[in-house]
Amino acid sequence: MFRLFEPRSTLEKLQEKYTFLMRRSYELALIDKDRSDLLNDKACKIMQEIRRMEKNQEARTSD
Image (cartoon, rainbow, N blue to C red; front, side, top):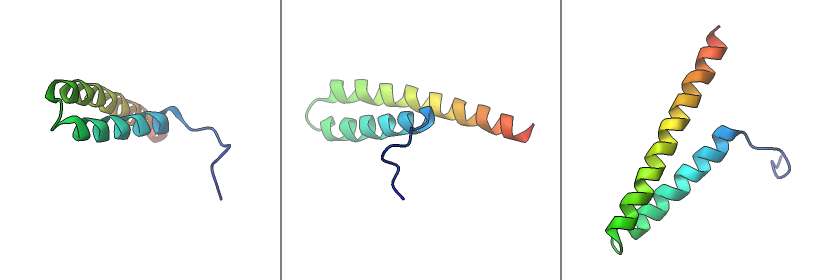
């Protein structure tokens, strides 16, 4: 029913962090462009990591 006490996977944690950073970057875009760009860069690096993890996960399941 609820996943309150269930541990989250690393992938889920990264996805939440990515979402948070992208939302924050969007909010800061009109106020502080430089800071927004830094957050966006961090989010892009996290997305690359997420894609790499998903690709590895797919490779393991296809074996």
